[in-house]
Image (tube, rainbow, N blue to C red):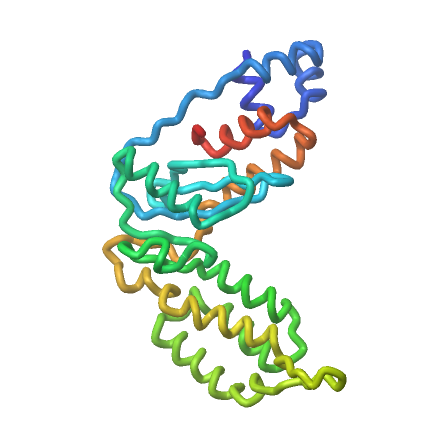
Length: 265
């Protein structure tokens, strides 16, 4: 009975009042059974795998870091964090390797897709997150032609190959080079600032991640995804459940999240 209640509470988003009406039990009984239920411990089988890593926001001072095997469609590791940090990803890798996993490549979102974090394995920058970074600086409806072109170019990441995208990006940089050098002088302080600062930041982001945008092309035998999208389904379920069951005590909320992710912490 408890397992059924928990499954409907988590996967089907049935609230306590709904479960009360459905099973004819008191609210206290439903809450007691939900509190007492312990999901089965998940112990993934060690393997050689590509790892996708990302963290999702679960509320004030609460992030859930998840490492996933995208080719097996299975979450391997999860840990609640106060904030998303590079050291948390390093610890995740260490814990998995200690358990017998061999990670052959890593796919991340830019905050962690850097060579110093995983210097010994191929790193792939998520195309979707790269486009989001550009859009954050240009907006989704840029007024400047340069911004419109750069946003459109970022949107071709997944349909381009490395040579074509690199050529197109370098052409954009040459075309708008002088424009991006424009400065605005403060009449009082006489100090200057870049007139198109945010557009420069969008450009610099692509430039910084360019060596890692097409790693998957260089290692076809590893079957590396070009995005972290494999985690999106898991994160979507978590966010929906948190929204439906708002105001949960921390322990119940953590149990809800890990149950939906199919992991133990």
